[in-house]
Length: 145
Image 1 (spheres, helix red, strand yellow):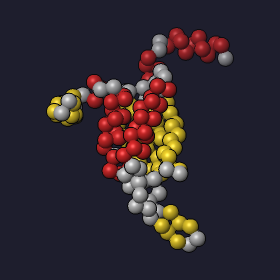
Image 2 (tube, one colour; image 1 turned 180 degrees about the vertical axis):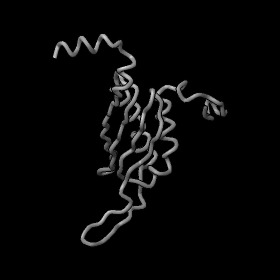
Image 3 (cartoon, helix red, strand yellow; image 1 turned 135 degrees about the horizontal axis):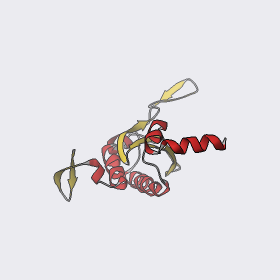
Image 4 (cartoon, helix red, strand yellow; image 1 turned 120 degrees about the vertical axis):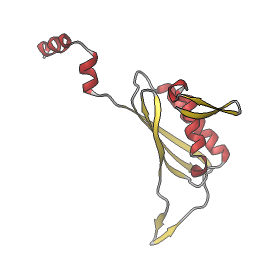
């Protein structure tokens, strides 16, 4: 159970009661300050039983060229973040028939425009399949090989 702000008040709610899109919105609210200091990186979101678990950002905090390190204090603007959030939520429409996996969003600002690439990774577990399907299924499958 988690405390979630809905309609201006905090309520105790189970995470699986929220849509994946709403959970993604919560992810973006949590990393807002971090994104404000970055112009490129990878946002990762791990999903278990159609619920967001671990999430975070991978990035290179410094960049080196010609033997010099530079640090940019610029980051994603509020407009960039809103656009990024909308693209991330839109990408959930391409998640089909899986409940466990990871979505990674590679992002960068190029010429003032945010560019986002999404990679959806599904995860399956053979032990779960052995429990879910009757044993006869495996005997039939092995005779076909």
